[in-house]
Image 1 (cartoon, rainbow, N blue to C red):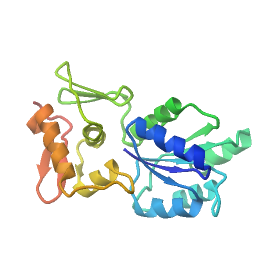
Image 2: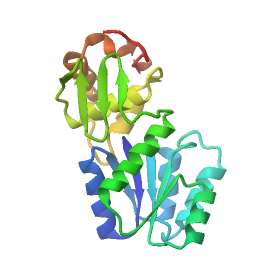
Image 3: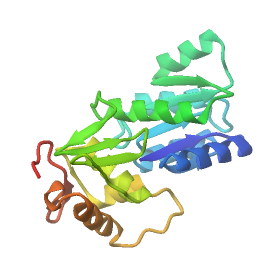
Image 4: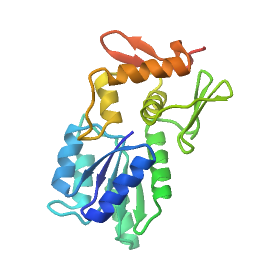
Length: 226
């Protein structure tokens, strides 16, 4: 999953980016509100971690503009405010402006990752933290995959791709969208990267799990039987 982190403190921003990457996220990091707003109007994200005290444009204003505009990209994106502003009034204002969650610094990276998992899961219409389709069970928290009661070893990108497909089961996903979810800015992406990962997933699980919709993209049916 691709996450946008908006944090102007260099040390903290670098730590958040590194920490979330350890949990398997692709992370873009913006250091001011104007850059964040531009990213949100041009790139698809699974969630945003947003500081409030930002230069050029405040976090609340970024959030207000995001929620008040009818954007095709990121219109319903979950937003987690991460800030040192811990007064009750600040929390109320952030949530009433459109945030989905609110955390106060200092914070635990494991908790931040867990809250993001919950936000992404709910945004995809899922309630069970364990994703299950056609005998494949994916646990985002444990970063594990089981098929027919056997553990399946996947690379980080294979896991992220399978996670995206299972979260969006029943939807046709384009190669471009999948690439955008797997890779942050600055990562070199070869033209057949998604196809290679799809091939590996079919081999490690079973071929019919992921359908190719010619000229459109890939589909994981909700009730495919192996």
